[in-house]
Image (tube, rainbow, N blue to C red; front, side):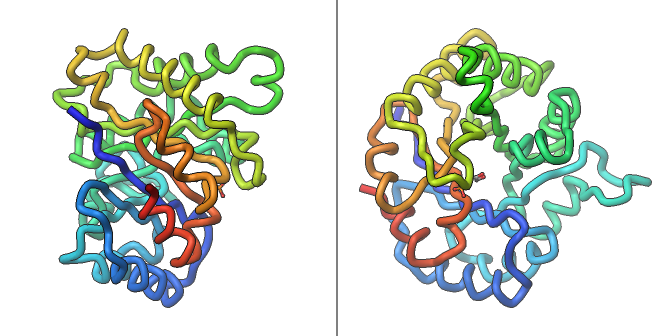
Length: 250
Ligand code: 13P
């Protein structure tokens, strides 16, 4: 069975509510090929408004992080039921900015993954090595640790419950995209680790997205790689024109 491509836009800490609505309207109006999924992840403040724009459209709503508890004294956090209430079906977890700027650990990220799945949100678990780790030859070691610890005790009944996003930290927001060979090599490695953790029919069907300076000029070549099942797009997702071109990769 073919894996269905997923093109995901992470708006990071950008857009007012009005800007988010306008961007969502522009994207929802574009013709999306029926063979692929599209997700938008606006900031928390714009989720409800974008959720209303996307209601009735095939475009999926995602959030940029999630707490593991359904409610309680967790100042500054947002719970899975709150995200469901806003219309989210997916959530980014363990983004490199959460790991490196806000010191989120693999253990914390594992709790977030578990909390999302408990509440029927699909986590997009982000993993990726820093430049120093790549140059030290540690890429596979880092990816394997982030996968095994991030997915510790996570039982899956189907491949649709999880998405993995490989985002080399050195390629995020730098304009320095991984080469197609570097992306495919990392994705194949990730697939191999997943095969040791889950049944074959699940591990072979989990989507692995590439993220890091994806743009209209490099998306076609990246998507042509065997184990690249989609893209997690930052900067180029903030303009309807470039994101729509990415959605319509060939
Ligand atoms: P850029 O596409 O801006 O490099 O960002 C990638 C990213 O981190 C998406 O989550």
